[in-house]
Image (cartoon, rainbow, N blue to C red; front, side, top):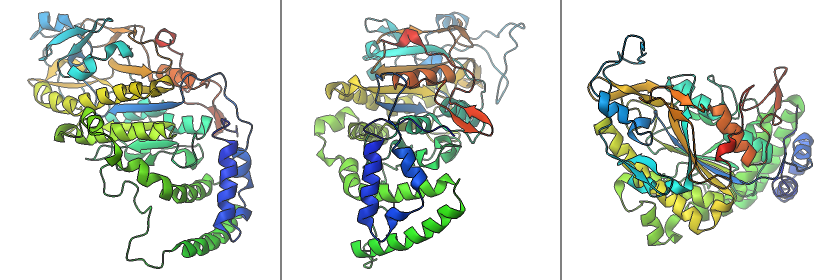
Length: 475
């Protein structure tokens, strides 16, 4: 099995801190049969090349954002509105028969020095297009939500494979001992498609899976502290419990040496103990100024949830979390970007819920100097059809969609790729998730072809056997 690549700040310091914690926990915890885990964490720190990015915030729009109603302006749809596609096209509908070509109901205008077309549903992000790099011909191998969400996160259509955040954690280790390396902030209304499988570590050691944080809950991290009625839950009781647990873990480790879940459990206990000190400060937004809270939209009901999570994402990366996912929309037929029924009725509310918070996040990162080593990625699982579903809805379309990047290492204001005149298929400089993932790993100092894990007799990697770094978006 290939060992992971650890940075100086994430590897040896983490290993020392763990040994110190085990010693403080008392009663033989440091004598656990987990020498292999400690040896791996003490491995020589290395990266394949000098990184430009230390932290990533991924903004994932669940449901399939309609590209021709947001960022991919198609004048041909205005000219051909209401016409049926010719018989040679034979378009496929996913959930229903395809209708006539449908123009966007929203006004488009050029913005910034780069002249990026943006629709009226994103007025705040439109002001920041000169800070972004656009991939206008992203393509998926599927038009089904579950496989599409897996593909954009793990590079595979099926479950059981590590996601991007897990690979980053495995490849680079942690920046801090006091917070999770990979944090997931789901929509308050529910988890995305595939539930927690989307944040899985797959066949990587379980410690690299995403840590789920419910930002709007009374306790963002459930059961981090004992409830008041349990008076016996004292520091001394914790030490006694650790001593008992040490013996049980030692026996389990000896009998199941290849099971990484024990390592993950031990790591989670240690992290929980450290987070009892760090988490209350991180998740308490009361110290943020009113101006900052307004900038993220915490003063408006429509933007409060996504804005809170964007602000928390900034606070997490500021304090050392490497990879944060912020999700817009739960799985299901409503409350997300899956606008089958009505583009004019369903798209504006979900767009409004994220537009101001995203702009607030980008401005805040820039103002705090965090854009120098932080990357923000905005994406979705696939796009939507240029022809109508029903009267004014749009169906699933894996043929083309849009992704943008902003921050460290990115050529601001650049564009790669173009869809066809209707926005139905990618036409020029097509990019897949493999190319996006290769680019993100490259920016973090990792060669996507060399970051591997031996599994089932195969040297597995995030990009499978595909992927090219998208050099035209690199600064």
